Length: 391
Image 1: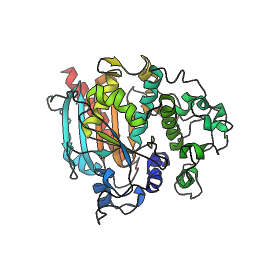
Image 2 (image 1 turned 90 degrees about the horizontal axis):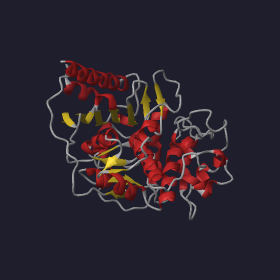
Image 3 (image 1 turned 45 degrees about the vertical axis):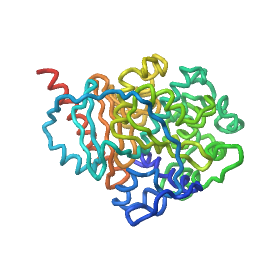
C-alpha cells in the first residue's frame, strides 16, 4: 500500500539542507538521504542515529526534570516466543504498557533504552495533537475555519475551500499523486521544489495543486497536507513545532529524554515525519492520550479532542478500519500511529493498553507479511489482557 511510504520521500528534501556533517560517512551509514535505497545494515545504523548524518538539521524537543513513571508490572503471558516475533519483525524495541505498568520491554539491533529511534509517519499523530493544543489555547478558533485563515499564502489556490478539519482527515479533495513509481508524481516533484524567500517550501508547492473532488467528499492520503498542518500550527502559535511540543507535552507530561525533529529546506519541522525519540517516550505519548491529554495537571487539548481524533472520520476503503485526525482507527475502539519500516504506537483505551515498537522491516511496508503479523500480535496482547482480567 503506497500510502505508508509517505514519509520516505521527505528525506530527499532534507538532503537539500546545508548543515555541515557531524559525523563521517562510513560503509554502514548511508551516503544519501533516500531511505528507500539504503541497505538493511545502513538503516539499522541510521535509524538510531539519524540526527548525526551529514546534512541533517533538526530542532530539539526539550524534556523537563520530572519523569512520568512507568513502573514495572508483572510479565504478561502472551503464549508466544516474543524474541522470535521480534526477530521476524526486525524490532529494535518493543514495549507493552498496560494500566500504566510496563508488562514487557525488549531491545535488539544494537538499540537500547538510552537511545532514540526515528518515527517516520508516527509523527503525523504528534502533529495532529498539537492542533488540539492550539485549539485549546485559542490560537486556532475552530476546526471549521478555512486553512487560508492561518496560511495566507494559500489564498487563491484550491485550498480556499478547505477547512482545518478536512486537512486533519485528509479529505481536502485537492488533487495529489503519492505514487512512488511515478517520477512525475506530486510526492516526487514536491521534494524538488525550490525555496521561495519568505515562504515555507510546503506552501510554495501545495498552492499550485488543483481540485479533484469537492472538499470533504473523498479520503486521499497526502503527506504534503500533513506538512501543511505543521505550517498551520506554527503560523497560528508563532512557535516552532518543537518548542510547542516541548511546552505543551514533552516537559509537563514528563518525557524522559530530549527528542529531535528534523527540518526541511526552509527550516520548518517536517511535520509528516522525522521525530526521533526513545521507545519509552513513544509509549509515554500513548499514555498521554490514554490519560485524556492531561500533562502536569493541565488539560492540553479540548475535552472531546481524542474522542473525535481517534475514531473513524473518513472511510479508507478497508473493512474495520478508518482514519481520524492523523490516526489510523479500528472499529473495536483501538487506534494507532504508524510509520514505514515498522514504527508504531498502538493504543487500546478499553484495555488501558499501549504497545510501542521501533523497527527496521526488510521493506518499507508489507501489509500482507510483517504488517499482518504485527496486527496479529496486537490481537494476541489484547486477548492476553482479557484472559488475565477474567481470571
